[in-house]
Image (cartoon, rainbow, N blue to C red; front, side, top):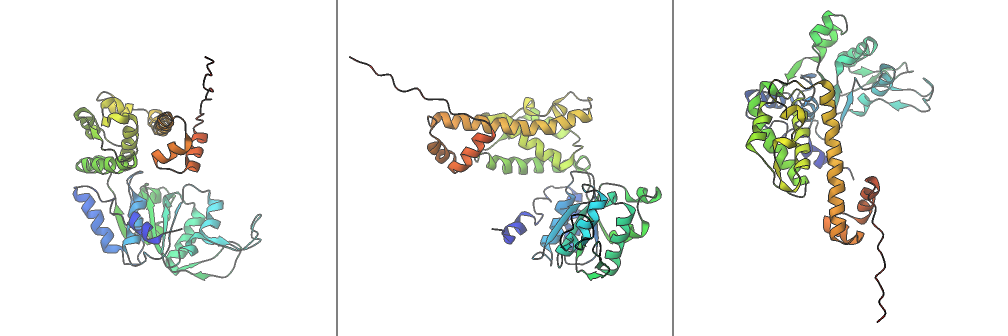
Length: 342
């Protein structure tokens, strides 16, 4: 069952503001300053810095925390589909519109609507969005009537919107409506003092998930992690820690050989974009290998008794069966005991 209190704890933003830099304190202070206001907020920063987490912190710390928080990525949906998603549609307004459907902005009524990558919207959607911000009204696709909406609007982008305006790709009037308050999240390379506390936080978090283990990093691994520029920001650091804890296994000591090649490579070498994408794939491959190895060892200890295995590792038999099927783990055939005639 959906637990609103649990969601509020998860997305209060407390984990976002881990660090000792002045920029982290400044972001936290801005969140607290705007959390109870209704003015639009624009969150800017590179990919992976935590823009949606800032939006959730504003919502779940503020006066609207008991109302819905609805998020959508404007760059992930084509414009011709995004209009219907945002504003809703009337039955029969296009092929497949078999019923009236409210849009995501309406579904956020009383709460917060978060539009990520607002800089990717095309001109028609920019015009409709401006109407929402100016008049607090929306019109569903295929309808003539206007509908009032009470929504706190937060948007985010990794683009330089001033440059988009100069090049004619973004409306200047919409820009000023969006950025009543701007919260800028600096990249991790500009706040190196935050790497260590983030490293400690993610190591403890994912260590608990891996059966409560305590993990440590060797001095050489720590030196490499601190020297790396983290172009993927906090998200990249988070994924790297997960990957390392899986690869180091039962030893529970992360060494340079457990780090991604782009981090453990000699100083001065620059990883290619293909290598960076491959590293993300390697994380999921490593995780799958860990799960398979863990299940096989548990089954062997329990002499391939599935009920005993499930009990030992703390999961239901149904969950164990699903994992075995997913990872194609077969129980070997057991030969009958040899019969001796004396």
